[in-house]
Length: 255
Image (tube, rainbow, N blue to C red; front, side, top):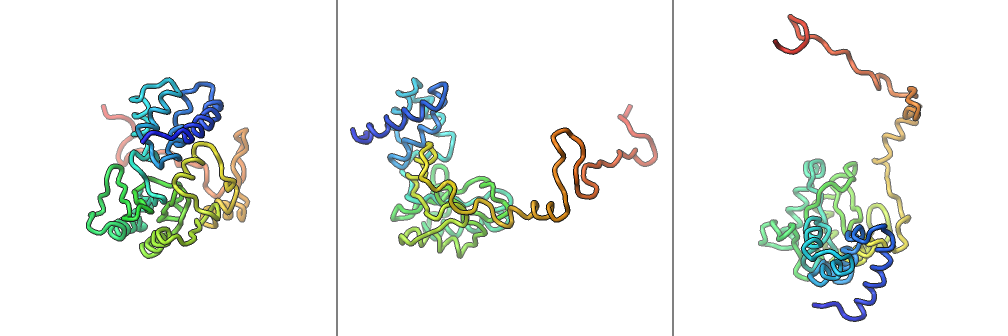
């Protein structure tokens, strides 16, 4: 449905602030799509029209961008979007199993296929489930994200408890980052460039992320200085064995 007058006033004021950050108005399209998504929970035809009119683009151009990125939903999203990483490492550590069991838990009989980008939405509309690509948290695999906040080292059991708590309205705290989990609309507003004051809250890295740094410090290893002179490195680092000629003859291309 069309934006109300109050919604248009809010959107225009926020959009003007976003566009002012860029030397060319068209560069503001991605955050503007997050902005209209924060109003309705998805990028509607009205949202696309709003962005096109502000930026001097065609609606087709805006639609091409909105339909390319899976972070933009083309139908109403759930209050909490649960993304299960099924990229290589998370998948073999249990991500595929987590997704399959959550799909059956949230929508029995759906078959786990979902619709569109793969979203499966619970009957109450509170939780949406999707497969996502690498969350850049491989050291905590398998990882689940809720509205782009991390839930690390998950199991099928802990994932089911997570979505049950979300549906019941229980307090849910991300493994790392802020202590309060925002809604999908609030997350979209943050991605549009309007922070909620939680950006610096909580740890962003944990022991698994810092293991390499700990070992390097214990051994006195360091990165080479910018001038290129060798610094302290682990034994054998930076050395490449000389190529060996094939047995029975000399190296080189065949004649």
